[in-house]
Length: 205
Image (cartoon, rainbow, N blue to C red):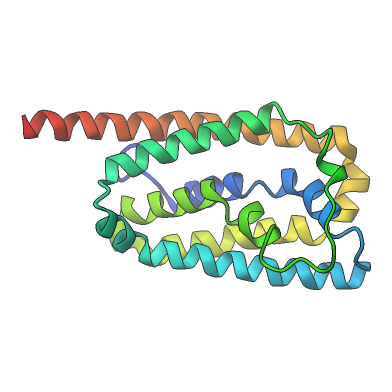
């Protein structure tokens, strides 16, 4: 992901991977297990829209947050790469032993489905990274975010069907494949941030 080379498709792929809808299937099913099937899907749609709203907020307002906190773009890119790397390692080496044992009383609202399962730290960092990469293409990134959320939503909307079809082993296998792709993107993001930070430091010196 060199400067200026990110496309709409690559942005969609990056955002889709960090949202990790396949890995979220058992989490969603565990949290919603006490809710009837029809209501489950309504909740999933609602939580996806909330998560999308949060990510859109960071997409358009992220640069102001960074400016207020005096955080340079290379620092964001490097930190985002580290976060994505940690997430990808978890995807490659998942621990599902306790995921189906999570208890949730009542109907979930915002937490934990919208935040942090969908709009988690990795997704927020990725959105801010994309927005600051080519600010003049902000509407392209907005469409990429909506597309990634839609694709993730399709998977989570039919989570119960996919869970029966794939099984726990199938979910783990797919998530590991997604993790392998994400780890390469994470390393590239980290290296891009580090190189830019080094260049800025050299110029300042």
